[in-house]
Image 1 (cartoon, rainbow, N blue to C red):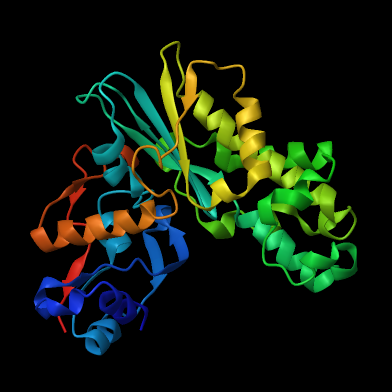
Image 2 (image 1 turned 180 degrees about the horizontal axis):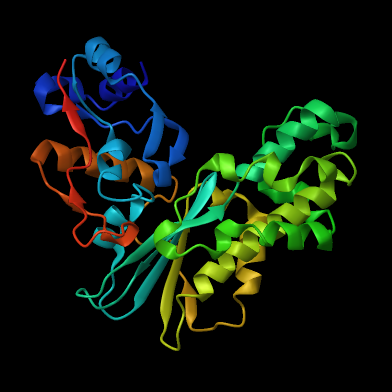
Length: 311
């Protein structure tokens, strides 16, 4: 229904049906590349039947044959944002945070991997508090799904023991090529039950947010040298003001790292993922392969990123 509404809104239904291709991602419920497993909730056949349009699907499954299949964003970002004079680092943060490093030299290999958590654990915390400790939340948050602007986290204090515990997770020490994260790795179990019932809600949110900020800032620092570098953010993370402030504060000692706005580059940071899926759909339709060597241990890691299903 959403596709049909959008197509009608933009007047695209004037075009022949075979000129319109739907390229949905689906909701990932399990991603374990080390076990060869990736599962997304999506019924492509039903979508093709109801809309009578071609549907590109199984993006992750096809990419998993040659790589970790995550993150996929670097495939598009290198096309849009590589700069010939400066290296560019781009952080995407939704439930999980990933990083793309684009060297200025077009011959140099890019890097891209999942850093770890972004807003995911914070959202899980808020939903846990709403269900189990609502009386301790501000009145306006007693039915909330997330910490708007990071306001609750900003009002708390850091619990040092929990902060150190979170940063010791083995995921953060994995080699880059093995860093493909599933949101289920960074949920309430990451925080542990013993903290969830015994600490002030604001302090828990503050501590978890600060730990996430540290993992993201440390990942960025690994790709900084003495040369000037552009840094940009997109995704839900940009709406968590406290998290963003915490990240940029930890980067204050690196003046060579210049933060840029993707809006100033002509792109809405809330819709980069949409552009990615459209681009992958285009690649499948045109039978273009994409290079996933940045997230693969294989020497050659090219594939067509999905399958085309006709109604």
